[in-house]
Length: 281
Image (cartoon, rainbow, N blue to C red; front, side, top):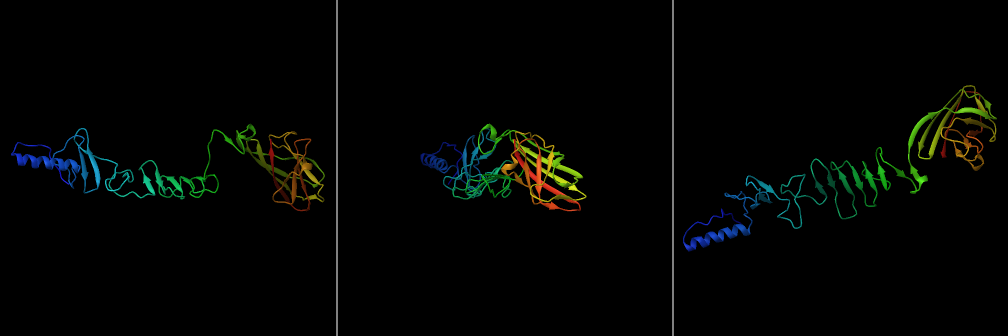
């Protein structure tokens, strides 16, 4: 390891030969040394042995630029936290300050994490191929811990019927229109969530004087469901859906856009009936 100013002065033959050998030695060892060469040239290489980094002089011959090639490890680039500093970069961590950081980068079956820090789990691909966004433990093929914004989503296929082209939430007022129950509904309210062609309705019916369904054939009929008509509701004889909160079946008729609540209940005090039903438009 040596350095040279690359100026061969006139001298005796032996001294010139010795100076040439020193210059060739400096070239062969990439001007290696713990300090920079005293005489520098544009694009000159210098192996900085104090920091174990390879440097090149800039075109203006005014500064040294550190090259991202590790001179102490085979087949290795030397980038650590955005700085080429000679520090060892672990096989599981490659980072670039201010942009992204790759954590647990491996060719084995361990997970790949792409994050802005070592543990926030911004994007994770686990050993089973599941992708997690904002979660480091995805439970499904795509697991998103947060809201999703997309120009279009298909569920269960790529046909027009599988395309979720809109999302809407709102309220509706169930209107008691018929039935063979005993009692009075004093207040009624409901909410709905529409995702594409699928609408899920909830309802709350309150009777302060009590209400009576004394057999499974007794029901309370309601209208006022948003979006639906006689062609979109399922046939009550086909089974319908189960209500939540009470022992009641929620069914729809095939002849009109009504919702029938069937139950076996008889009270003389305040009664609250709740339920849900899902309809495919």
